Image (cartoon, rainbow, N blue to C red; front, side):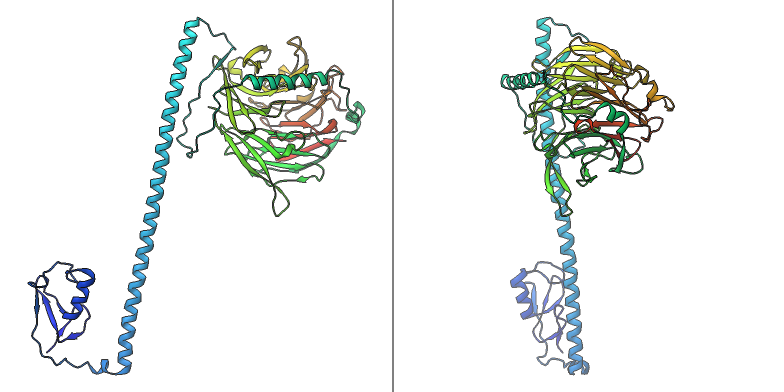
Length: 554
């Protein structure tokens, strides 16, 4: 009889047995297997010595004939089909195992890469913390040796701020200027301020400026346009800015963390909604300059970051697109405001923790950080038209008021007290003489300050504007804005908007004493932002109780 090969499943007349495993194989087939895989048993994998552990079987040379089924052509085809099916099943199994192995390898590589990034970030944060601690000790020793005492509402210069960024993605090291606001920068600021101040002294009111009759008789609601989320906690417009051009653009920021550009000449959105921040926007600013104001947009948010966006042209739908240019994340708390310096090359951001940071606008480079003493937090702020002074509103917890900073020395040069509630709005007149402020306390009204005397020269009574409105314990904030000439001051509170004249002793100019009252409001929400258009011929109003941009005008 013949031996049955354990490897091929066929009868063989050259049978051999591996004594270590007891399995029988065809001699030639076992030799070929050994050439490829070494001297191991094909079934058990046990090693063997081909001279000592392989025994040939003495079997008759006559091989048992195939069964009648295997001897026929249909039978052979069936056997071949079975072998083919077995081969395909094995190939499928191998491919499946290969795919699983590749996925495991890919996941392992990603985990390794993430671990490397975390380690790199922790090393960087450790080095930054060491540097900050060394700077703090050096500054403290210097202050102690000079015997200087900190005074309330005075400025202190901080070293690099320490932040917990464990929940953020690893980012490349930010560019950092070590020279601060240099003499060259100060010279540029002073030169720009001199030019602007000189040109403003005898500057007449421009032709086409809206007249008193226009405001009293011709100002009406021209339209309302939905731009942001329509429902839920992310509903509402929180901030806006205009380019000041005839038929120009308006950019709005919402509680949904998005911003959108609106074309006033076509009365339609000029861009897709851009998801800028994870939380509500607190301020938005067109940074592109007079020639192309819509090219750059600055946004800041409650998520503690400020971002600058660059226009990327139009998409296939004809809408403008914006690409992120850089992110500024140096504040410890909510970023409450940003503004562009008058020369157009620098940017300032204000944080609720009480620091303002001066940046190179084009490079996104931090030049200087200035902080207040005694935990004085900021709530809003803006540059003086000449660009050498920075006004910052403070919170009620810090004894609400306004700090005026000199950019040349980065020191607080004036403190204006007069509010009990947190300052919610601060705006400079284009003539450079007046500043308006408002607080969360409606009874305090809107205060007009003469910067030449550093005195509150007038207070606008908000009684006619707030009468008939119901407010909660946390009422809507009061917001103000001057037009581009300083002739008119717009004020919004709750669901009402009014315009006051600077040369009319700050009296209301709209026909209704209570102003326009068609802005949606609640006991805690209402007008959140407003800006005049070109020559005060239009007024753009946003409300955090509604998703519509309202346009009043002639």
